[in-house]
Length: 637
Image 1 (cartoon, one colour):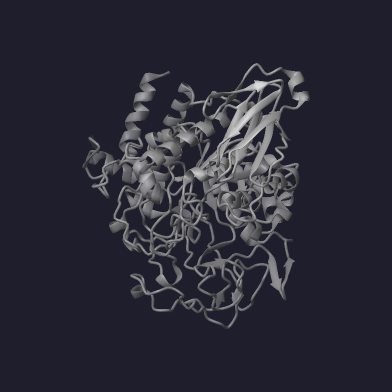
Image 2: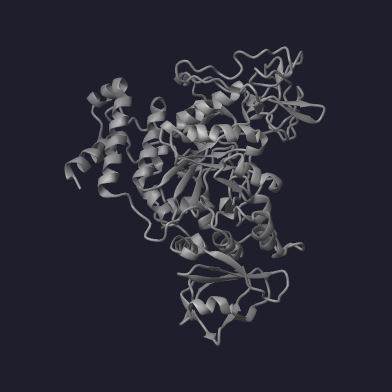
């Protein structure tokens, strides 16, 4: 290792990418000769930054990249993961925020906001404890918001077409810019994001961001676009509802009308006058082709035209020649790929024609063949098409496994482990390794919320299934691993069992792990500590398991009702028996006879539950199982 190179890289990194831990310094002047974390930035560097910030940023990235190569990026000591990766979703706006005020509809000054710089090496080390491979940074790209950045040349948004004060991360207002909320120095926001990419890569992790292809904010206008790039809609013929050359859909001769609100008066009401100038009106993002969408529609967004004409309930495709939106979106993907992004989570992927994905994904992978594309998908009937024809690397397994497991976790009347069997034997048969399993994300209820399980432990058996059933990826959502309940009337998000994506907010359980930037979990309570320990153990088992990564699956009949399930994952090197009991009352007691074909390969000398490292009695090819209510075992034999 070249010590001089390491020292130089760390010195430059410390100057340009300081770790902001003192939340009392809300907007530290890093480039104005101030002391921050005992690092003094002289005036000469301020001048150099203003004139050569791009060069300096490239030097940092290059040096840190060389350092990572020369030292060797941290490697997983387990097996080759292949498709069996772990994705961790976080919103930088919420992840690094230590402010606990939590005023409903509060401003950024009142409730605080996490920054790119808050995601420090220590924070990333905490994710690596969960065996994370990819960090999905949600809400990075500039989106509509009510926070005023007009002094930085960013136009103010209209409260009538923004959801919440912070705004939806899925109402993109500039595809070539990052959210100014997330920068310590707004004028250097892109450099701060590029530094986060470099930091993430240095830790041996990869970066995912959102790609929102179906719609943009009503206020969309790119001020950061590269020279020669045309904005959406500038060449549109607005006199027609549809044209193959248009970027948007229109409602000719009708002006946009703000939806009639279904919400009680709140602190944002004074900012809303019920008017927004858009004439002619554009179609709304969720395929609403009328001048006035409802308050439940995606009224803050406008639908993009991928060459699909919606006529009398039919979808007529006009895909030759290539629609102009396709080319614009390809250029956007290439732009972020060249920034060092390693993959894209593609929002509502099924609302865009599969032909677009089939065309664009290979085009972008020419820039980086190792990119991954994850599709948010909800229609099992087209999963195979979007994987095979659309060329997605992975798709959400929401409608299948997630929905079935949620019923079991909630102890609903219709809950049945048959849903688990249906998923791997039928629904995703042949492409199981392409399905992304999860129990939480920004769209779904928090497990520990009153509306879902109420207690994080009630989902432990389901999480074991999510992590071990297939060869594909699994996803965690920040706060899930510390039993965050998603409580509180945050603002637009409301008290809906979710953590808001529309408001400035603090996330209490996560903040106790964050501990004012120390990321040491010192403030976690007993339940939160136990939950994080469970996730760490489960993810460690998964990361080091050849049977989970590469193994076949064999169901083991239990002869019980609807609340218990068992299967074996196995290779020539390893055999794991996974047993889960979702019953809230009954203990599962069974002598499970192991398949003779498996025993012929290697006679089991002992059996151990890897979750608690306790021995399991094995006698004459049978395992004595005693599984308490709402618990699971992963038995290596």
